Image (cartoon, rainbow, N blue to C red):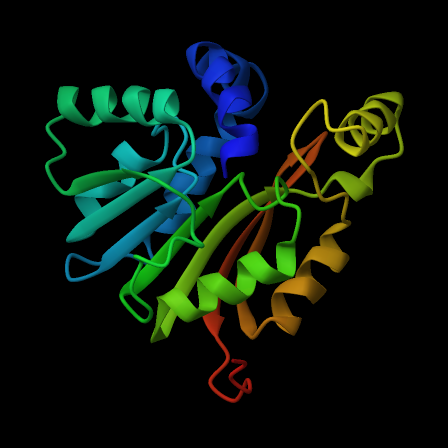
Length: 215
């Protein structure tokens, strides 16, 4: 957690501007697609909440959100948005999903928006998400599938990630990402491509009840 905190702290002040240039519609569609899976009795975990772009939009749809991020400055930006919009249903914590203080089977729904491709161990992250969800819980996620394009930009991202100048990244195709989700015990309920370059894909997933539990 500590190793990339400074990187995301530095990104916080310009994150919204950068995202808006490329992903404005994708973020809007992420929110709209997510709303139909939410209800006022749910407790949600927002994994890697960033500056709270989606957090503030979805907060009115659920009973409570715990929004977590490893960057204190990202959380500060998200908290400012929440306070301005009077979203009292959101609590913030500077941590990650592997924090042992997060109770297993606590959450009805977990949001993982544009965070899962920034991971050094996707399978471990998905396994942890599954453990934090209640038996009928849902995972709503959007992720860049960077393996879809073979461009100079993607080559540079691979290089920078490999030499640790930027955080670890997954370079998966949509089908590869689907397979990883399913292999970790999730059933795909909905899938939609939100952005073409880079490919950004939304998934709504439920826990597969016959998936064998792993210790």
